[in-house]
Image 1 (cartoon, helix red, strand yellow):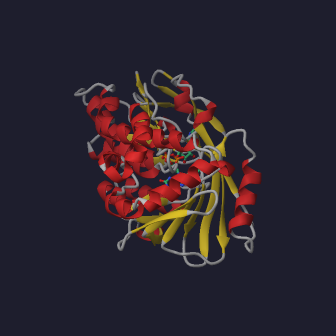
Image 2: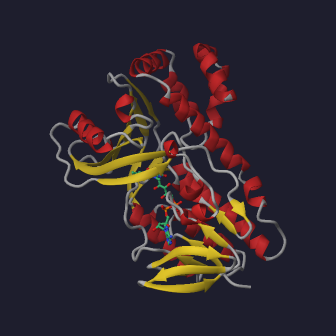
Length: 380
Ligand SMILES: Cc1cc2nc3c(=O)[nH]c(=O)nc-3n(C[C@H](O)[C@H](O)[C@H](O)COP(=O)(O)OP(=O)(O)OC[C@H]3O[C@@H](n4cnc5c(N)ncnc54)[C@H](O)[C@@H]3O)c2cc1C
């Protein structure tokens, strides 16, 4: 049997590769870039609990530990949810991916860099390696090739352009609360939000996302100027985030997709590292069984049930937020604060799994004023 091919050496691809190899099946990873983890776009905010569930430590990639979040309305009202203990890590994404790469190499997984997938026909891959076209053989090809996935395209899966968010991000120097991330809601960031993720008291990753077609560059500069009038943007990166429901039909014949390629990102925040790696583990386990003739590739989607349930809730929350005008967000934040949402979320909140608290919120008499909205939202 030919080794399994994974396209993309990001967190989802490397997690999947390691799971396959741990099951005794040969796997090769193909990565178009020379350096793993580059170009770096990500803010690197990941839940401590999610990482623990994956059995991964942030190690040298750790930049900061976060204890809470402030969610701002357009007029500057906010709710603050804070815990005594660390709830999330900020990691350097290049270091994080490099750490996963070292783990993969320890398992003797071959990662071919500067090798870009162009096409797949049956069990033949057409790749561009070091500027030359070459052929590779593989019985199964896994697309962990990110938001603009070639494998997804080859599978004929279309995604509406409204389900992408365009982001701009920079690293600012200034004065920051190093334990709290900021989320800024409002029509200025149509379809998403603005964020401040501190790396230290002096540095933060600051960015904004909007639906495609908005002038994200202008919105980003206006946001930075308003929030940090004394800071200067030296360099800003632009990138896309998948922001829609998790895709269906993601395993066909000898092809499957995982991570950003399959829209396994939280549509509320754009975070995709934890769910991408969890889905990578699921797919790795299934593909290894498929290779041994003990399972069918269609099992992959069935095994994603619990992950997809959470991702769909994130998407419903995103759609709900996207439907609110500035004044409605202001009113909602003020009312939620009056009703003690900060204490509720401090106790019950979960940044990855909304199912852990949405039901409790709906059943709490204090939040019955949200009943109509929640019902509409949960049954949509
Ligand atoms: C501005 C921004 C901020 C973010 N902040 C966070 C955050 O705070 N927390 C969080 O959890 N997530 C965040 N994300 C999302 C996170 O970066 C992604 O969800 C995550 O990187 C997805 O991992 P992946 O392995 O699926 O894909 P990727 O990390 O994108 O890896 C895909 C890999 O495939 C390679 N590739 C693509 N096409 C080919 C090809 N044809 N041949 C060979 N190789 C190919 C790419 O070079 C890349 O290395 C953010 C994203 C952006 C844009």
